[in-house]
Image 1: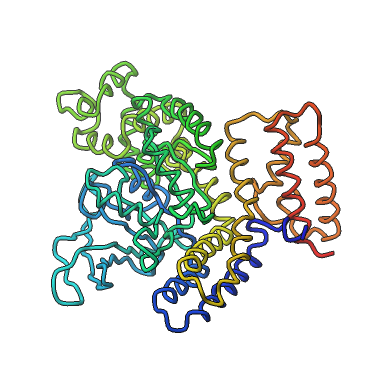
Image 2: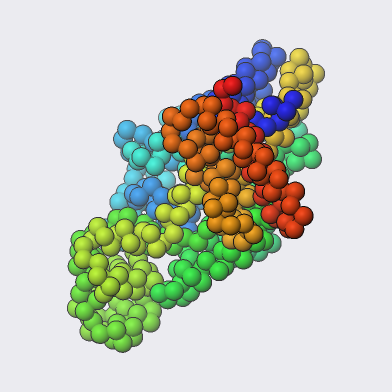
Length: 517
């Protein structure tokens, strides 16, 4: 029993994925003639073998499409408020670019992609669709295939704004992330994403309510939860400081406040400020733009500051600057005032080429930090997150269609879903980003490693080189269990420290359970 309890998270991924496959296969045998449950269970099985599904969600105009472009490093998502931003769009890796529209009945149509000039990006033309079946149809969702390394192991789902003026548009996101079975058993559905990146411009009641629904799901009363991983992003972070050079410092303070409210309630495992517009502009920085920044860096500070009071003023033809007004307008649209100020400052400080400037701007945008957190909390735990989604879906099906031999599978499914130590690790990693832990620096670094902050492989958790003898790894893991159990019992430890130490001890136990004896 102890061994089962301590096995958790992505370190046991091959085991839990295999068991999830076995449970789904056993359930399918119990429904030989029922098409609906068989279709749902077939989807469960497929999801275990597909890339991780990460949904971008948030209120209207939160910057989801811009963040998607910055994460992928290519202009693949339309950012204008066109019809395509009102439907769910799936971005998958593919050998050649293609966009396909799907109707609710499964009919498809190829979508024409138009690329604008200057600052105008992609547009998906949904006005003239030639469906592969007769008659007009409504677009249910779009699927975009694009050759991008960032999509090789992760499918990104761009969702409509949760606060859209159209109730139907907002419901499309809710159906994907918090599907319910309120219409009866025949309407049972399953969450479409394994993890969620939720974009915040402010933290209001609507955000909190939606995150609560994502975490619990509408079947929460049955003990069936939603996506396991949720990360918050303070989007358009450069706007928080009105485009000032210290805007991201202000955004970081805001993120810390949001984190305190969300992480402690379990609604998010981390909250990170990101200037998505700057991140994407940096990833696609052009030599012409670098040359323009060099010219602006030679303008006296006071003169340039006066020109940068607003984007409209910066692009005015009557403002004497050594960059044409059309190019200035392009810089303002692509980089924002914060990005322009940051680029000029970096060049004044010694950046001498476009590649170095792009790297510096990317780092200051916050997107590298977000990528790191996504890798640790989503990428390296992909199998755990996918298994959690599949088991959640399996539990929904078994609950909605009782009275078959598959009923006997439900206790085991619920047991696996109840093993949430991986979630405890994610929450602790998030809190360590903003809260002080009363531990010496070496111990804090060790705790961070043990709970998977540097990777989830046993040798990484134990701080040992790859290929270290298993006997040595077992000895280190056993020592870690004893050490962190003892730390948790220290009479002067506060509640946060005690909980953190117990989490580290359990992580060490889980590592020990995976090592050969």
